[in-house]
Image (cartoon, rainbow, N blue to C red; front, side, top):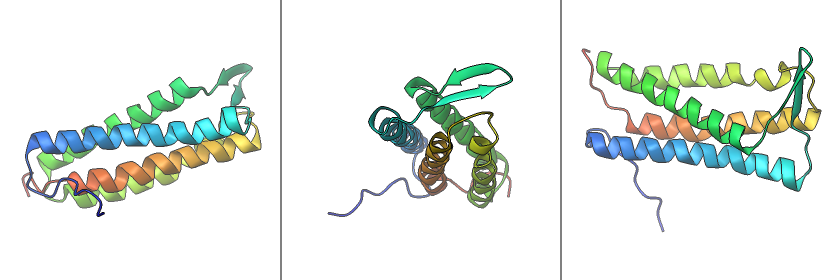
Length: 145
């Protein structure tokens, strides 16, 4: 059984939207699954203390942040498609740089358990591994070229 084709270049706006919405949901589900294995199953403590304030990274935060990142990425790609003929190339390069920069966050987020740092790093990688190729695959040439 072969993998279903995503949206090849030149497909309808509706098909691109559906593919991108699906990618956003898949990224959030992937991050949630990492959290699910780490927190309730493995017992990782996701309490982050910074400047005397403690925040617990829970399922809602993981899903919300993943969807937020997906929507920002989607909006950026849509802008690129509108204004440049190299939207796909610029999207991939920018998204990879943003992903790499985001990998610093779990290690610079205050007092947090080492297992939680690595779990958060894994969540960032999962979201990037889903969004970057799936959004890139839906990119159109468009733009002013």
